[in-house]
Image (cartoon, rainbow, N blue to C red; front, side, top):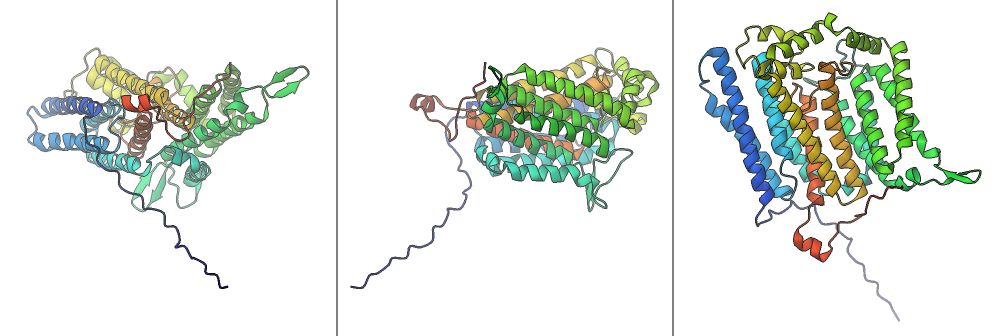
Length: 464
C-alpha cells in the first residue's frame, strides 16, 4: 500500500510590523507637552535676551527660531505618544531645557558652532526615535550582549587604528570617516552599560551569596571578582593608550555602581576603592597626562583655562553678567568655553541662579532615571536604567566638579549642554533607552488587577 507524505511549507516568520497608534487618553503625554512648551519658552526667552543684549534689538528671525525649537520638541513628543505613551513625563522636557540653555550659551560665545549644534540636535532626535523603533523590548538587547560587547571594544580601540584615528593634542579619542569626525567612546559607554547589566543580572546570586568554603565558614567565591580586576586593567589601559582620564573614571564608577546595586555588599565598594586608589597613584607616576591634571588641580590659578573659569563664576555673581552684555565674551572662544568649560560660561552669563538651575535639572533627571529603574519589571531592565542614569549623573558631576575644582579637571562634556555632536547624539540614544525601560515598567490599573507581567519579569533580590 503506497503511502503519501505531506510536505509542509516552510515556516515564514512574520515581518516586524510598525507599532500602531494607541488611542485613548495619555495623561503623562499631556504633562510632557506642557513641560516641553515651558522649556521651549525659556529657551526662546534666553535667546531673545542674548540678542537684545548683544545687538540692542529683537532678532528679526525670532519666528523661525521659535518654530524650529517648538518643532523639534513636538516631533519628539509625537514619537513618545506613538511609541512610549506611558513612559516618564519629565525626562524629555528636562533634556530639552538643558539642550536649550546650552544652545543659547553656544550662540553667545561661539556663533559659528551654533548651526552645527542645532544640526546635531536634529540628528540626536532622529536617533532617539530610531532607538524607540528598533528596541521594542529591552530583553532583545540582553540576547545580543556579547555582540554588543564586541562592538564596544571595537569602538574603544578604533581611535588607535592608523589612518582612522584623529589625535587632537595629546588625546586619541577621535575617529574620522570622510568629512565626519566623532568620538566612538561616547557610544561605546552605552554598549558597555548594556553588557554590564546583562552580566550582573545573570550572575547576581553568584556575586552576592557566599558559596566558597574556607574552614567552617562560607565566603564569596573569588572567581566572579576576576571581571573587576580585568576592568580595572582596562580603565588603566584607556588612560595609557588614549590619554582619557574622564572616560576611565566614568566607566569604572558605573561598573562599581552596578555591582553594588546587584549585590548590596559593601565589600565590593571597599575593594573597588582600593583598586582605584592604587590605580590613580600608579597613573600619577607613570602617565604624564594624569600628573599634569593633578598638578593643575592643585595650582588651578596658574592654569589659564581653569583660572578664567573661576573669574567667569566671580563675574557672574548671583544673577549673572547678563546674556549678550559682556563685550569680552567672544574673546573666550579659544578657551573651549562652550566645550570643556561650558559650565563656567553658564555661571558667567546666568550667574549662580543659572548654574544652580542646571545642577537642579541634572538632579531631577537623575531622580527620574532612578524612578524608572525602581519601576522596571526585570533585573536586566532595572540595571540598564541604573547604569544609564549613572552615566548621565556622574558625567555631569565629574565635569562640573572639575570646573569648580572639587575634583581634577577631566575635560569630558557636560551632557546636552556642551558643544559636541558625538556627545549630544549619544545622550539622545541614552534617553531613548531610558524611555523604553520606563514604558515597559508602566502598567495600567487593569493590568495590575489581572496580574499581567512581562516576559522574564523577576524581582531583584539582594542577599542580606
